[in-house]
Length: 287
Image (cartoon, rainbow, N blue to C red):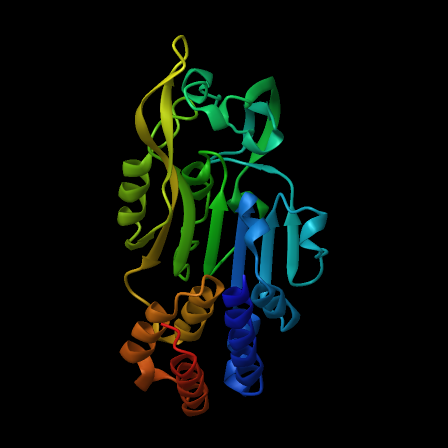
């Protein structure tokens, strides 16, 4: 926790310095973030400061704990997102944060002690829409946790959606916690087709698979994790936007790699601001 506070402080100071530069402030105001699903709970003070400086933010399933209201540069959406507009069956669970457009695979959930409390409460028809129908979103950073529905949501976007989307973090499963949901390999294939490469595999949640009759462990299974993808090619005009997205997740080594690749394309003042930032990270022994 102390480390995160330290990093947020450094990131926010960089943001303040960048905002004093005309070109830097322009990039901040054009920067667009999207948090869909439970991921909003991990939003940092840095993201809130970005919003204060004018960056655009779209949130799905935000709640009071986020302490942010809809405003000119913040959009809160509550619609159920899919790959096409129409009606679909929605499976509401207890607790509700496991609800999904995919049916809960209770046979699989029942194998793991920490998931046995999750049950389907009811199923009903809902109106679903697409991100394309909700607006012309052009995010530079996106974080998703839609209980198996991440690829569905991405399939319902306009052709230009991925043009300037440089960093994506999404939850994925190794086993079918939901019936017919996409799995780990499907995510790799989908993002590879969109010209992204995997740069990080998050902590893998593992659990003992148990015999329900004998209540004995049958071995450890890998269940789910988070994947982070970065676009293989960065538009030289969007270097700062790509770096801001990486800073949301404290990915400093990738920031520096992009800076080194594109520094000659940067505004001179912006370049000096980044040099000052990287020197501060070096002094604090942060990589």
